[in-house]
Length: 475
Ligand SMILES: Cc1cc2nc3c(=O)[nH]c(=O)nc-3n(C[C@H](O)[C@H](O)[C@H](O)COP(=O)(O)OP(=O)(O)OC[C@H]3O[C@@H](n4cnc5c(N)ncnc54)[C@H](O)[C@@H]3O)c2cc1C
Ligand code: FES
Ligand code: FES
View 1 (tube, rainbow, N blue to C red):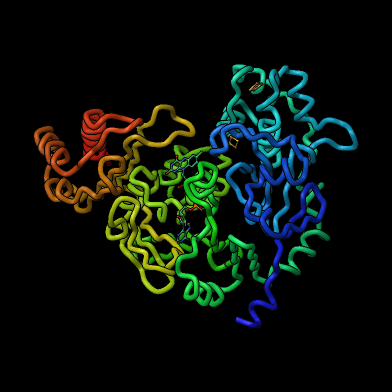
View 2 (cartoon, rainbow, N blue to C red):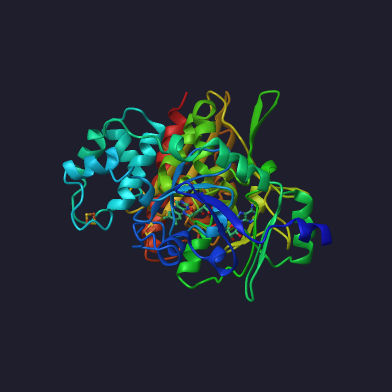
């Protein structure tokens, strides 16, 4: 522990609009938006919802070796900028000249009260970092995480389509000298302690394990898309944090093939955007489910491990993972996902245990896989009820069948009795109705602001009818 302490840094370091920036003490625990506005006077970044919902606080961040991504700075902690390159709205103009994106917003009247404008400019700038040319669909997809209450959006979309000659922020800000400077510090863990708060960012699994043994009650910090909201709402003080972000072993997506079964293992630091890209060719139906998850700003940071550990009964990846026979890998064991959720927001993780990776099976060609999400709007909304079904057919009905639901019980639920009823049977209308009757016995929906008990029951039954009808007709 002595060597550990002497080697550890007591500050986080990053490049902010090209300027090397070290942060110590309490500022490390602030949200990035608060730090920018109140510690640095960079008030171009706005805070509106402080929940990741509106995009007004959008900035760009590149983790070591990665590209600039748009993120919500209102729910990210300064700690999460360690070893990163950060660009804010103040870094967009060049030598007093507005950027091409800013110019287009002016020309197309994309701004009225202006409160949302920095966020839109940053999201648009991010889009042009990744796409030389765009069309309206591309613009809409990249801007789903930004809300405007004044313009009606059309002038903003017009501005996006009018941008010419985007000036690459990656080329301007992610330069070799800065990368080298940060890389020199990457071998040292970070240990920051204030009177009431502590943060540890290990660089090896051994360091992590030693620390967690000593501090089993410390809280694992993923991307903070759940935790940051709790902090802002005063529901959790986030006083003692352990961030896994510098554990490179957790950054990878690994593919494993055993005979005809392909399993994918998703490291705890892999973001949902990175996962989507990896799945796009090999499992397009699974990749497409992530289009219904949050906004680009959230997916650019949020992790699958965080969604699973958060154990919300309406977490969107959970029915998908249950249907795809997933398992949760910790430091020492692999837990089948249908044994992982043991109560309302309670998991089978023991004190000190972390999720290293989530593994799941990729559907084969000919398999049926489908995910349903019901929410009040398509983009950036939380599910009322969600469901996933995986089916493999044989000569007589489904030889393999897994059906899972969220939002209908205290935990995400695998409908094993419904599966037993249907397996190896000819799927006819009367059997589907019996399955629907069984579902009603197995779920315990509750009323809340997203839907009443009766609505949840009805929608769950309708989803099952639809899923089974489609699965039966498949192939
Ligand atoms: C605007 C907005 C929209 C959202 N939309 C959706 C949506 O559409 N669908 C949906 O399901 N969710 C949604 N979420 C919730 C959230 O984005 C996800 O749950 C996300 O996957 C959490 O990942 P994270 O890395 O940010 O976790 P964090 O917030 O960092 O952590 C969440 C929990 O998991 C624990 N944890 C994290 N990583 C590990 C690990 N490796 N080992 C052990 N414990 C760990 C943390 O201690 C914490 O308890 C949304 C959130 C916001 C703010
Ligand atoms: S302030 Fe609304 S997303 Fe951050
Ligand atoms: S211009 Fe007023 S909120 Fe968008």
